[in-house]
Length: 209
Image (cartoon, rainbow, N blue to C red):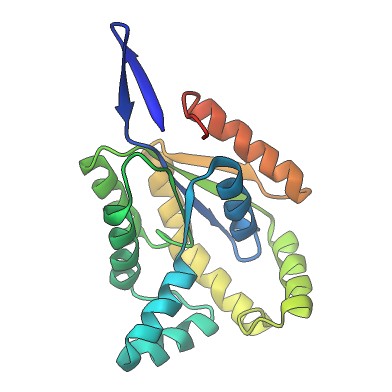
């Protein structure tokens, strides 16, 4: 929860929302979970929300899962529906982490507009990794987890989606002053430390219960 001093009086401010973005294999999911444990912020994983939505809506569920398994982006309006519902149902006093959303420019523009309208601060943490590092991580993950979206063909498609769509979203957030670039190469612990350092610099009055 955030507090702002004004003439000796403390006023409760809306808690921030933190979005994690990055290339496939950048480690954003792992870092989002570590950040959640450290801060106590709730974590909303778009992939989990999509799978729940698919299970509840059989007539479109198979199509949603097929697109996800091939590493393609789903329609922006569907992702918007999921995170809008999450944001509006979430207490303003409680921090929220969103992993795997606002990867298309339409989403980014709407996300920014919504959070400005409800007067809720936010930052987008972008984990920066090279294409070579990304490929190595994906290959290692495929061997360990046997994920259907970690094949060479799917990886190329996901990278094309990233460069075609997500890079534009990142440029938008950067222009708005909400992008925070994080060096995503190195040990998991070191990356986590950099994220926490940036967060504390941006929101120094955040109190952890």
